[in-house]
Structure formats: structure tokens, C-alpha cells
Length: 164
Image (cartoon, rainbow, N blue to C red; front, top):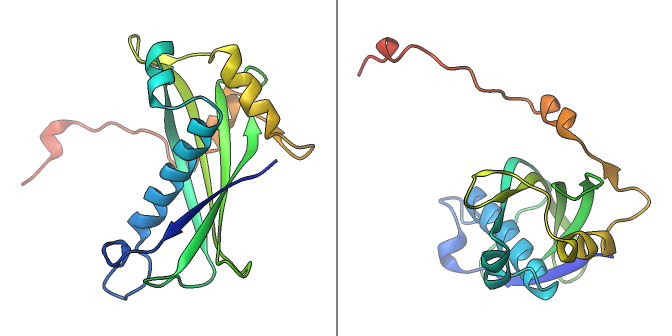
């Protein structure tokens, strides 16, 4: 199953080149995910009751066609990958014009965290059931090992190296 969310591109969503700004793509994906979660009874109120929250760890984009002001854009929410317990997930978002032209794709990998402990957690059964409804035969099974495939990893430095 695929969830779709529609946006009307506003002037404030544009960049200096008069097309949809990179930051707007991030915001549209986040809003589409929250609309999906609300539809599936995983909205902000329910997440607060459960004491969990979704956290995106890695996000990447490919752009194919410009999106302009006053256009309608439709953003898909697909479950592209998920751990067996749904503690790790990967959403795929595709941006379309109303006539079906594919303008961009985003992939966002994240985890559920316990809001008190600030640690990764397994979500409640309601979340697992909702996520399972959107899985397909192509949905990849994810694990913590997949985090090693991210292109960037933390490398701390000595603060004395800062020269400002």
C-alpha cells in the first residue's frame, strides 16, 4: 500500500531560483510522514501517550524535474525497509505532479526512540501493525548492521583545534 499527501507549493517554499527549495523537500517529506502516521492512529497525541518518537538518522534525495510556485505536488509515503520488530524503518517518498510526472525521490531511514530514556526502542504493536500494512514483497528487512552502510560516521576532534 502507498499513502499519498498533497501540497500546494507556496511562495515561501521556493528558493532564489524560484523552484522548490531543498529545505522544502525535507519539510514536505516530514509532513507527509506525519499525515501518514496520523491516518494510521500514530499521531503526536498517541506518540506522547506511548512515550515514543520517530527519529530520522539518514536522508537522501534525487531530483529529476523542477517544482514551481502555485503547483500541486503529491508526495508518497512507502515503507521501503523495516526491521522485523519495526524499531528501524526506511521510508521512500516520491514527488509527483497531478499528471503523474515523477519530480524527485527521497529515502529516509530512522528509528523509534523512548522519549524518556532517549534510546532506540521497539514500538507498540499498533505501530508494528500499521507499518506492516504498507510493507510489500520488496520491503527490505533492516537491522542495526545497516547503519554501517550510511556514508557518514561520527569522528570527534580535539576542541583545541578550533580556530575562530
